[in-house]
Image (cartoon, rainbow, N blue to C red):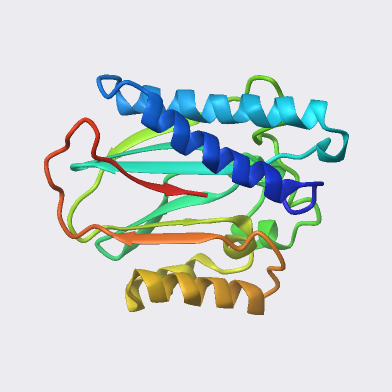
Length: 217
């Protein structure tokens, strides 16, 4: 959360706790349980630090953590970063924006174009660190060879039309796509929180309890 004090501290702590808790969790637990527990622990530690260290008051962060195991994808999501999937030439958003304008878009009160220029587009309804307990969206779906997954913060998706994001993902391999999306985000007005992760699914090997791949904001 670039507009809040010490947002970079909260973001770093979230990723640190996420990785630690995922490694600590029993491999026999379902992946959905492991991710949900890890994100809830990250929220707790950020909230605790924010209320005990005066310079860190009001800090918070968004987090979208995606794990791919075999042919399955599980994601835990809080905030307004987006997880997108490109399949068969079609780009869909798998997560919901936990923001004021995101909620209005879901109810049909705002169009995507109106949301990009709305004066209150940065107001979040949910984030890590604000409350002792946070609502976490956990989603499960399949992945197939040929899929492209992309995660991006609002510093990118809020300034680029969906059609342009689709074209970039179709035209570039993952590393080049990341660089192009960040560059275009900057050129069109994004000033901070430009974070992008892109991965192409080449095959879907059988899962093992301790083999998991993640995308983290």
